[in-house]
Image 1 (cartoon, rainbow, N blue to C red):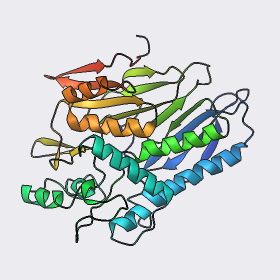
Image 2: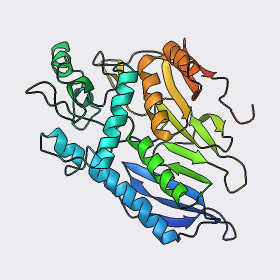
Image 3: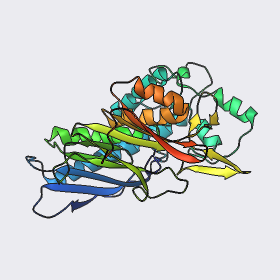
Image 4: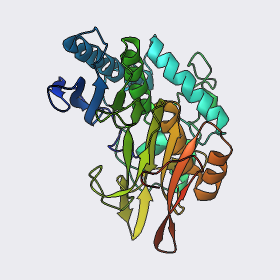
Length: 337
């Protein structure tokens, strides 16, 4: 999803605590490494009685719990052990993410399917390496994928089949929401949480609602914020803001570009003119899921979907015969417009 950074999990490092601006302000920032990249948590300490070191420890604790529960790269995580067929007693986080994933799967009629992990592997975008699989390989993998093959207790409904899970489509948004929820619980009213995907609420240190840059979806644009297509302007209410695109994770073979967005219903990478989708939703996990969903279904269906939802706003960037164009929903506010 833009996944401003690739959302595969990696080892966590100890957070760094720095002031976000001058010493006279009450804004602070936590930074560090998590989920394969850097993270940033900015917030206003005004009226908050919890100490900065305690906040840092709590944020690190959440990141560690996500890593040991949902990471496909941490071989000792609950997810990794589940995927290898080990008996796992899921914790509350695992059950919550699984339940959310099932809701998105049902709503999108299988277009969002966390039980399609092997498809990403055979195309070279999962936890193992692969590329350009044959139709026979794709069909054989499709036969063992799908949340419809797992019951609510996370047991396989088909003997001998163990669908493997990959929570990458919502894990970063979920993590941002968990950290935002903690900050809210200690009295923080102004915050911007960026764990690869963003949740923001309130105002920044200048006293105005947060604004977030939307990267131009040009192949090779690997640095968030270096080349912007536009800037979303918030209104102070709590929002998840997530961009998904195919311009940072893809490969080319035999003159053809293969994107990392796989349609789990067909088993193939998507092939359409939608370059990126930015979704604004009440929380980051919803924005995360629907940004990916839009990238699966393509431009026309994505516009219809966004317009049908009163709780969502969207910004779609697409290719029109070689020219990059944009579409914004009626409530999507661009700075300066």
